[in-house]
Length: 493
Image 1 (cartoon, one colour):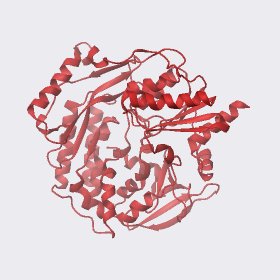
Image 2 (cartoon, one colour; image 1 turned 120 degrees about the horizontal axis):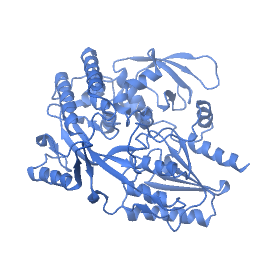
Image 3 (spheres, helix red, strand yellow; image 1 turned 30 degrees about the horizontal axis):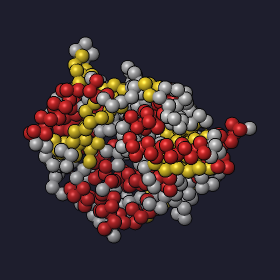
Image 4 (cartoon, helix red, strand yellow; image 1 turned 90 degrees about the horizontal axis):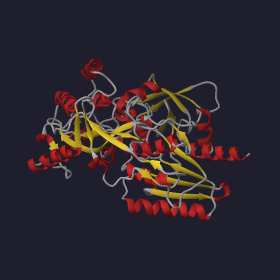
């Protein structure tokens, strides 16, 4: 559910031009919402591949009860959406998407936060120029709520695997929308901020804006500066004066022939130009096929490497099939359900001692376990940019680089686990009363023969300070890219 509330709804907000009264949900009540939350938790306890991986039943039940108490006490209709229990499962692949038609009127009535914002760790940063608060200033509090607490309040949109706390990296241009959801009925926002280079904070009162203006303002954000490099799935930049090339990879969902064509052309050009340093930017890569991660790594590998991942799950049954949807978004038929069940039963074998079903050889058909370097492999220095937006197969690529000691990771902790995550296959359910859609991963995947998962992502070797971050953006430089270029320059001295 990382950006579920904002995804489709945010486009519809363009049609409203004035702030209205907060409207009720269409077609369901607040109690229906609570009932569906309870149903979703019960379903996940049965259907999720490892529901208590990072908790125990007692702790989980206590947190769930606390969440429902907060929902009951919160008088705001819209704020009730913030108490979605899927965040309690510590699974970045778990999603709950609300039916846009049933909640859109509620969003029309929000008093929107007027400025574009972004984050740096637990800080909120002004992300636009020409506004009452200078670009790059740190927002210390809004309506007397500290910035770190505000980010904690939007945990329904920023949860990650295990104990990872970098999910706010994924909010992007929608951060100000999520801030608005914390204060949905505030006609104005009291903002305490501190400008870069000043000693004392300042306070300003900002008038809330309507939905149309809020959407427009959010899209005036200066960061990320490298939007040009995000114009395609794979983009390339060559800085001959720096003897450096930048490869931006936004997904590993590409087919092998398409991925290989993109990668081989890049590394052939790197070789032709005699470039000594390669920066691989996967900060916004949401994952895909781990075999494509291995393919990319083969272009920087200096020797053959293990490309091994194992699957396991607590359950291979299909629960509540009457609420399941197929790939077309319609109710799954009886025959389709049987095919799903047979698919899982053919590919997982039960280990009674461990209490898990483990993937058999059929799940790794077509994978290369002892992967050779590509014929155009790069032998120079490698830098990989990572963030909380580096998820799933993208984290696997970062782990290959890290565990094989083949490069320097720069940025923040990845949004999914270094040892494992959930992935592979997904089931989608329609919740009975609100018609929200719950997407559930069917299996865990463990990378590189890992046996345990401590709930952490890939940690960077190098991480920017807040001071450096502010200096770079003041100079209109992409922070992580410019920091890496500075690392390369310092290594030459």
